[in-house]
Image (cartoon, rainbow, N blue to C red; front, top):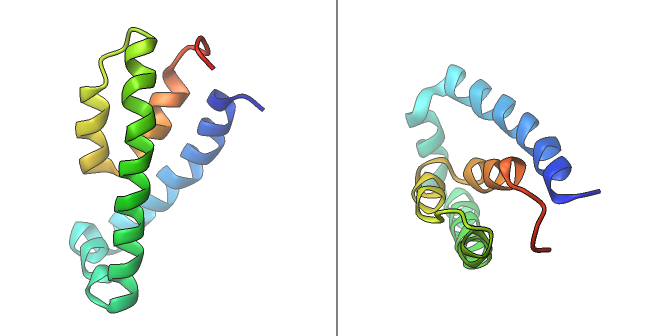
Length: 95
């Protein structure tokens, strides 16, 4: 399975769950879940994983002639949605 198809398969349910979470609790409902020690650990784990993913995404974007900085900024605000969109919309050139 190529990266584009996998990204789309992962992106669709993530968007659905994100929309559901926003409808039921708003942005504050999402933020408030990180106030427990367990929530803080999950948030920190996500931040570390996204930083590691960006260390791959930035050189990958450059080698494919894409500007990486919009994806970096979107990742800061949208989390995993941005890298999944990056891979779902990219060309499969340098694998």
